Image (cartoon, rainbow, N blue to C red; front, side):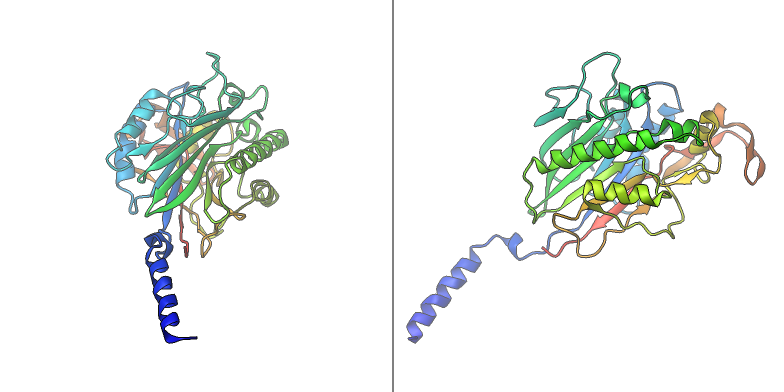
Length: 349
């Protein structure tokens, strides 16, 4: 081949390469996702004002600022307002899933959303440090009749966000709670588990309906109410949602732990379940049929507390704990009965 033609081909190739976007050469940026059930309930008063007022400062004080916060049980306007206080750190956010059945900033709302005055919002909110390009909400059709969840627009939020020129697809959710697990530990919670799996199937099909490219990551985070200690249930959760999880058994904390969290302990006392209850119910997962991280995104539980303590009358008194009888003076620093879970995703493109 003549040298002139080789030079011409080389020049054409160089021009083609130079015309590619910078993102084609740069590695896809890391993304850190945190899921947190903040226990801001629509009924009862679990010291909610003190806890929600301290929540922004606690999030600001995290050793690492997550790119995305997926929050559950944001059931009140007051709780949502405290999240707005974080807008300098998280300028992009969704509304609350199920608060309204149309509009409210969503590109679409699907499923069984109810406007009945007896039905409360679903409580899921997503906050992002990076621009959110799309927001979609789903209210699950599957729900257990007779449970508290039946009176909630429980569902999922899907956001497409962009960081460093790359798109990420984040789904936040809160699945059916086990009333039997909490209020009657000896009872059969299989009906609740079956509803959770039905909700995951709804979510799976809903996500697939957006036609997300297989070359882009899909991350699912939330309070899934599946006990990590039940291995078969965890396997079914992962199979049903087509996801993977990396959560080492050596982690010192669980996300819903009456053993370590005094608010969970108070919940256990009120609900009549074990004051030594220690399980993880919250997860950050990734769809394995989409772009996977270069290494498993290891989930960690963060024992997040307020920097200061305050008095709550219902915490004060003698507690008959598994380790013996203990006096509590009523001062505590718990922000929720859940601890948040977090994972960082790294990609090679």
